[in-house]
Image 1: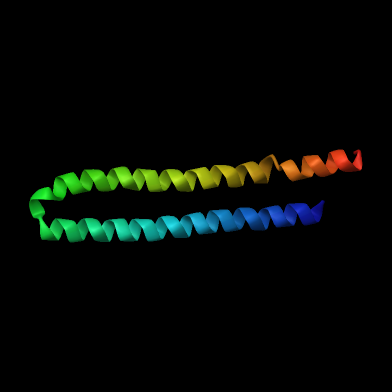
Image 2 (image 1 turned 180 degrees about the horizontal axis):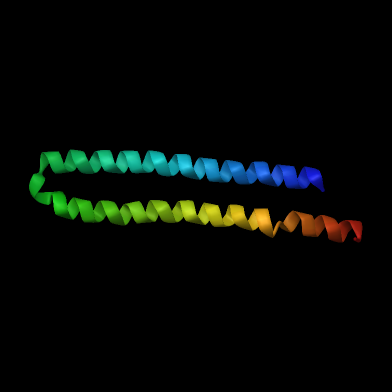
Length: 89
């Protein structure tokens, strides 16, 4: 049982860590490209800013989905229920 819980914690940490890393890289690229586009054509800056915030919300949504999956595995671990049923306890 302890091995299942330890591996679950490691898996959740990987999911959250990789999600945070991907979000940070995505925001960095997104912000840089928005600034680059605004510097090239300043008259399009309001439109680019609106689209940037839309894409930023979508990037955050992916991270929140990963957080929800991690919390599900942490608090309602399906592997411990299967182990308990297999052992008969």
